[in-house]
Image 1: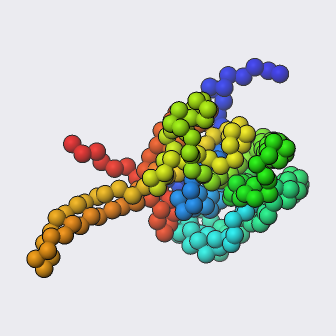
Image 2: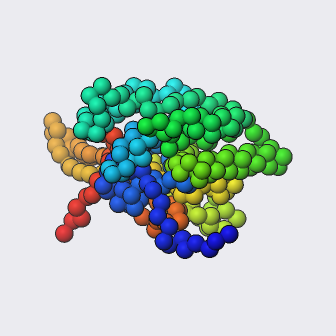
Image 3: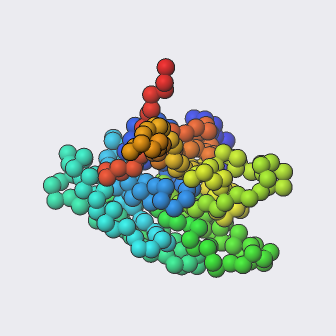
Amino acid sequence: MIPQNLLEITTQKCTTGCPILDRLLRGGIPCDSITEIVAESGSGKTQICLQLSLLAQLPLSHGGLAASSLYLHTEFPFPFRRLHQLSLSFRFSNSHHFPSNYNPSDRIFVQSVHSADQLLEIMSKTESFIENSKTHFPVRLIVIDSIAALFRSDFDNTPVELKKRSSLFFKISSKLKALAKRFNLAVLVTNQVVDLVEPNDGINGLRIGNLRCLYTSGRRVCPALGLAWANCVNSRLFLSRNEVVTREENGNLNGESSDFVSKQQRRKLYVVFAPHLAESCCEFVITRGGLFGVERQRPD
């Protein structure tokens, strides 16, 4: 084994399509590793997965991977309507990169997954599938949306079942990492959250990761699947959403006093841990055209 200076290793990345998010992630989602996106339902996990599946098709010179994507979905139904909407926006914004009859959705291979065993079976066939897809657009992005859904009800909370579950975690992650390394592809996995009911000092007095920093919808949460799965991913991102009061007014309507409160939902993307990133965050919005970071001006 030849020693390597990890600080000098450059890894290819897939752009998020937004300069603000790319700046936060130092270029986008890295190849040759597993990136996890953690969030509650409706926070934007699937949005960014669909978006990256399209952006991976961009030329290397524009931050893409010049590649197709394999999208394994466990949440049903698959959002084909939203994919079509994003696809139209992507084609309009990048028409100069592709022929007029190009359909970016054709470069996203969608496969449903109903269990962890089925996922392992699919992954055993993925290697030959990727090898046979070495055309103008080889597969260089694998999305699993979401990993937690496969373990939601198949395992009991007993030592034997938990050991079996952990074993599956390591089998799945090792196969994904082997594929990522062999084909220099990016792996993007989504995960759900659960309410954290432990004391503020962490689990049994031990702070694991950034548990005290994960808040969404006014709740303190932590990623699903526990520490065993956390050890299987290289990078973890967290999406939060919270309502904030933007304006309060006291008024008088028909001789009666009334209060008016205007609220707005704000979303943030946090870097929880990553070998190449510092802990940081930025605000983002979800529009018809996709998910984009925003920079708010600080009051003087």
